[in-house]
Length: 109
Image (cartoon, rainbow, N blue to C red):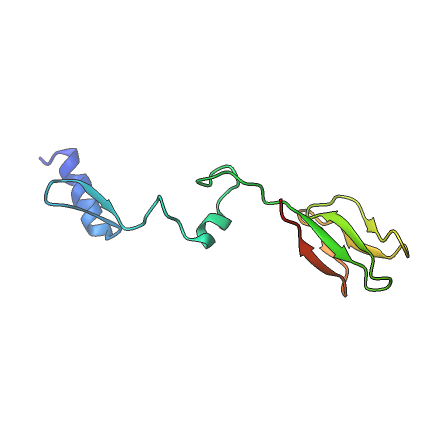
């Protein structure tokens, strides 16, 4: 009869994702303190090492009159240009979709 810790050790050795040192300490194959930027971006906004929102503000330039309007990335209403009333972005389920031809710049906080 094998103990639970021996079975756990064998399962870890078979998995290949982690292994033990000669002192019995567990070494993970993945560094949890230094995730890659791609992994950070994919994780939930509350489960990152440092919580930060997925949303942002951006300056959108109208292709017709070249006026700049500040738009929220997850806008839930249609945003019109102040100068010529052209539609700058339309809401979707998540992020707002910019109209084709509009250029934008993400605002710094």
